[in-house]
Length: 278
Image (tube, rainbow, N blue to C red; front, top):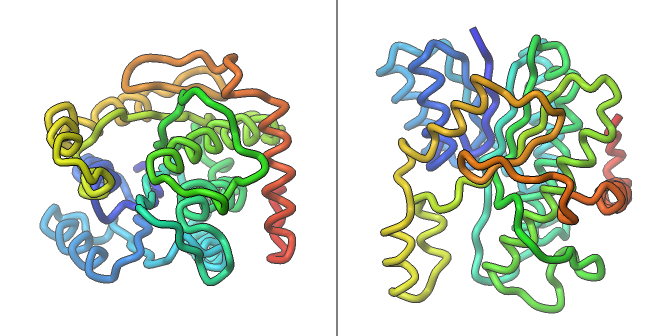
């Protein structure tokens, strides 16, 4: 029986993946911010006869301390698990900060994934074929704004989302660089357009909302290529896909030098939390 940990696993796209694995007899550890969503998740798992295989941990993953708490709880309850799936994301039209001083989108879409990847690396490494799947907009062209990683000078929701995807690309490269055992596969995955409430709310134009509704895939269909990747993981330590199309990870957006720079910058950000990534 495979054990899958899914951030954002009690709602939207992440819940689609969670329910698939519960139906197939797997164990799912879903992380979510809402008690209500957690109750619905557990109730639906009960209806599937999977109550004992469905674990819900409520946490605000935009906070460093909450990520640390999740890591401690997972380690105390599970010696190992097979896959770590990142779905939790934040789409905001205005810039807001967490109580720890990080911009919310940066904190949830990038920083949380960084922390959990390294913090749960030991548990993942004990599985036979461990894999991390980072759902983001991998393959986006453009540069990292090194002088303003947290969008203090200007904030545009769509640009912020694309910038976060570039950070996740580099984070995946950095993780593979630092995984000396070379056992954990890291997959960056761009689902393209998926009909989730968060994405629909991001667009203010009625025309854009209509276009997204037309081209966007329903969750049950959008999750299929992800399942295929998890069931038949790539051979490479790092890989990137836009739906079923494999992307070239030698392109500048996956620069090893920039990945090292981002890793060092992030570790420095986390120093006051006494965060250790190795």
